[in-house]
Length: 367
Picture 1 (cartoon, rainbow, N blue to C red):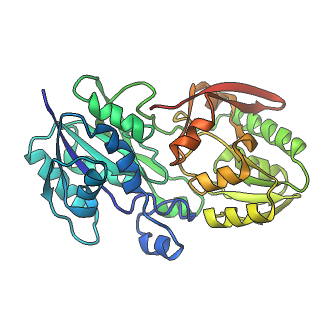
Picture 2: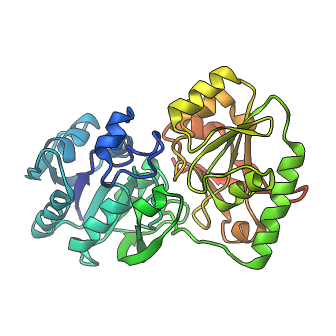
Picture 3: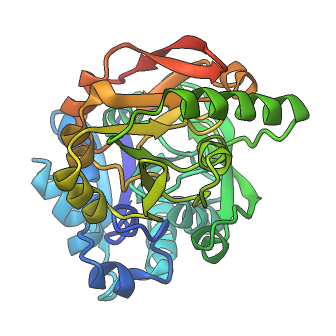
């Protein structure tokens, strides 16, 4: 049976990531002022271009909210059922979803982040399955494919694979920007599920043993840090503990840079990191995967962009995680926005999980 898909795009999703805003909700003007550029359309085209030869009936929105991405992907036949306002808003996402339901779609596909997921859920509920092409900053919800290629595979097989109830999370972006993670369960959506294609929800680990493990990891990293070397330290409580042990302030949900025991940049954006790498080419990147989801790159740390990764060198990527987090995170993913660079990471990464202790974890590259 021919699949009918309703597709919509949030044109501003993810713009705040590379410029260090940790989200775009309510901050589009500031993101533009800092030099942010739209990225969600490119992410959508990556997925849609893999479906140009599939027999899918596409329903979408006019111009930047869907139509342009489908045309850029080489999909010439679609029905633009909804015309959004300019600029687009959450109300347009909801109105588009109502239009899709009225048209009898089998699946609603959206390209955006957690905020877009909530808007979709408000209208669609569990009436039809939904799937997110990841393009936001955090994406703690479990309704997203792990990357655009995985999204294409899930769309293609949506009528064949089982669906699961997946969490949609509500993250307080104002709190997040101030360094505090305040998240609550917003609801459940029905999502096509294929292992290693559909991402999980974020988990937070706070057990006493986990805190000791963070101290052990921090002690080891502090011991092996090299002089005259720039250390770009990603988001998370495990990485923050490294700086705390050194007596340095840490941005829990941002990216800091240190050299010779001093902070040279706090809560740095992509351009700051690129400038520092020009000044200090000898560099290491310290990152920790998101608990249970397994994303080392591409979720909540878009400041560490493909340009930053290439300048620092993938061989200089250091991954850290506690044993408890690793036990709940059997697979790792990278979704930097540059698929070729992601493949260069290889099929596994060594993860430092204690004092002079490391575990090797498989890295999955859905194609």
